[in-house]
Image (tube, rainbow, N blue to C red):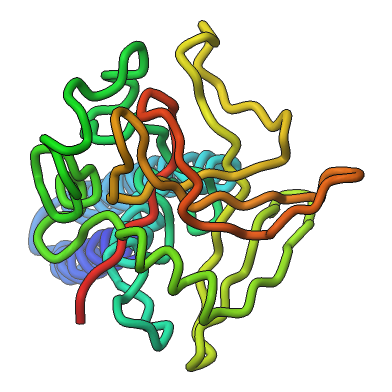
Length: 269
């Protein structure tokens, strides 16, 4: 916007200088009535430039107002988020972790929900991925089943069961209960941190496919399968249940593969 304004202003100044020289020339009597025509030309050019400037400012102002109310639609914001989403965070562990969930529109939002082994949102929620665990194996880094590799490209992948355990055992977990930001700040051994938002889950039984929080629990897929059609997950209870001992968070809990959980990617050094 500033560049456009400066270009128009430069053109206006140069045209004004040219018109002024013509006015002075005609005002000396070189051509009868030429001074008036030159003056009218200056007024016309000035008016035209003013109209263009007003239109540019109005359009630019309208865009700024829209993006002020809808900051996530701002192209600059999207570019910054895309860059941050592909900037891994070194927590001092065996792998680096992504700063946000797959499909998230901010560093604190939940992102998209996927059944285990699917790379398209909601594609296999009804029955889950066909085939048993022994035939599929660990899907970390497999572009056919790993949504992190599919969405973010080479180097990115879903965390394994061991990498999920490492995140729990070697990091400090701090609960965040702000109005618009709920989840956990996970601080690595080196002091760097990531934020894991409260996610809930999706199931094929809900026609709206919206997350629910009946158990105050968040789930993140891990790539390592268990027997039959079960897979390991990173499970985080946001609140302890009354009269129930809750190990918070915990890793290695198994879940049916047709649930919709969020995914947080990792990347090797």
